[in-house]
Amino acid sequence: MIDDKDTTHPTPDPLLEQHVGALRAELAGMNAPRCVEKELMQAFARQFPRKRRWYQRLSLPQWGTAGALCSLTAVAALLALSPHRAVTVGTPVVGIDKGAAFIAIESLERIEQEPDTRVVEAELPRTALASLGMPVDAANASDTVRAEMLLAADGQPLAVRLSDSE
Image (cartoon, rainbow, N blue to C red; front, top):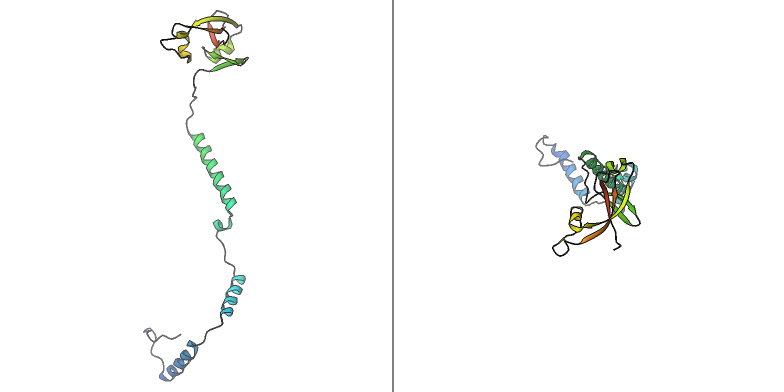
């Protein structure tokens, strides 16, 4: 289409300009029916389908699965790369007998290596068990607690279990 404001082309022939101007005036009033444009666009879309990008091809559940896997991978990497320290809360438990647990006084390796152990009942002062987590205050500091002691062959205490029987 020739533009009157276009300065890059030389001015057209005046006779030709009359005919082109008449053609412009005639075509300005003509429009294609709405359905024709719509059908042409649909035919073009069928013939040349838009290619979706890779991230548009994934469905919402696939994105959710990918996000969950990335999160698990990140957590696993953080756990693998972070230095580990063993954290003990309280004192380690040696064994459970009739619902009560032995509380280790010595290391678990020492207790496992001891060939001959025996269990002895004892009355212990509450203050002696304070280091194992027994609550002690001024009112009950002089009380005794019934306990069972796991002793080594040489008589050294390895573990203690508090008895509920009085």
